[in-house]
Picture (spheres, rainbow, N blue to C red):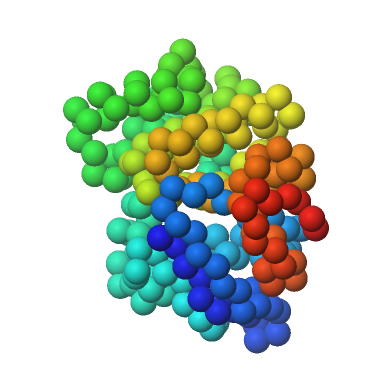
Length: 224
C-alpha cells in the first residue's frame, strides 16, 4: 500500500532530513514511526501527503508514485490526518466541524445527516454534537479531530503526535480509539516519541534517527 524506496530529503542542499530510507506498509497494518524531535518523522508524513517531494528516491501509494501525481486531491481523499494541535474550527460546533470536511469531500446533505451520528458513536461523542471546541477537554477535542479524519472513510490514517498534549488517561483512550479504527480495516500510521505508548502497543515499530531507519520490527519497542 505505502512504499518508501531509497528516499532522501535534503533542504537547502545541506540539511538532510531523511537519508536513503526504504520500507513498506501493507494494507491494514498499525505502524508506529518513532524518533526524537527532528529525527525526520514529520518530513516522512509530508512526503506521503505530497506536501513535499523527495530529493532522491520514490514514495508510492497504491502503486502510484506520489511525486508524479498531477492531481493530489485523490490521494488526500484516501488519507485522513490527525495533528497534535487538533486544528478544529473554533466557531463551529462538533457536528459542524465534521460536516465541513464532509462537504469538502463532496458528501451530500443527506449523507452528512445520516453518517455523522455513526461517526460520533465510533469516537464516543454522541452527547457532544452541539458543543463548541472551547467547551471540550483536550481528549474530546482530539476525538473530534479523529472523527473528521475518518469522516470520508480513508484507507489510511496518519496520526502526527496526536497524544502530545494529553494526560495519561486521555492518551490511553485515544490509543484505544486508533486501535479500534485499525481493527475496522483502516491502516494506521502513528508518529510519536512516547516510549510508554510504544512499549505497550505491541505493534510494528519503525525507528528513525538522524534521518535513517535504525530499526523496523514487528512487536517492536522504543529504543531511541
